[in-house]
Image (tube, rainbow, N blue to C red; front, side):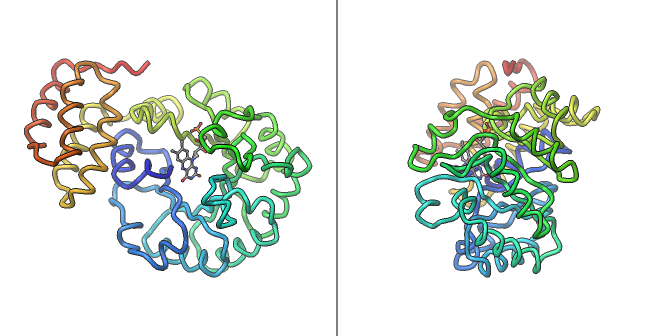
Length: 316
Ligand SMILES: Cc1cc2nc3c(=O)[nH]c(=O)nc-3n(C[C@H](O)[C@H](O)[C@H](O)COP(=O)(O)O)c2cc1C
């Protein structure tokens, strides 16, 4: 998720799950080819398994970016065919590739030819008047001709022109259509996404499809991943909330770039919102983001003590 699942957030998420696949934000192929690839693609070794999500619509650039991603050791390369934002529309990529299957096929073909890393697609159930069961069936079938067998499907149609934020709740989700695709193509790996927030819902979905992708739930409550490991993967996990947070604080203290520290703190503030008695520390951390004058180590020391002694989760 853009501006959310950067390497710092993923490092924190990995403290709470051994099994779940983590994904980068969408990164445009041109940013990788023309920008600072190290800055965009480097990650902590503990993040595995981790997927790189690419955006773009130029077959050659996507292939070159995917090759670079492969060199960085990502476990999966995923192409974003689901984002409806204005920026994406003007660049004719993201979900707009669902309207131009010919171009999408060339992109897939070019990437597929050039990498050995698993290559997957994240799409929507439809976009604008490109919708319905027949459309989605044809779409998946055509794309699979180019060797794609894993589809992450966001079960909400994209509407161009609608504010991206509103398009996260309008129109209604249609899980049934995704289940139909799994019935129609049992050989595909179908991962469902959209509006899933409870462990009971994750379990229910797994009765119909092969996997579940969680977005906003995990950003707002990364510790939910502890429950996923336990109840979905059946792991008696050795991971613990307070240990995970302490590891993350140590990680932040070892970052040498102030910008990185501020990004990493933003994620920390998000998670400690769930803990009682943290108003003061959130205030202190926020002021650190603003003026960088506070001694982080000192704040963390106090907070670690809290975590060990009296902090309790108020997550559910
Ligand atoms: C702030 C924000 C940024 C997002 N960025 C991306 C992105 O970079 N790539 C992507 O595939 N989806 C992105 N999404 C969409 C989510 O991955 C997901 O498909 C959507 O939020 C629905 O799933 P959820 O209800 O589990 O969050 C983003 C969503 C949000 C809220």
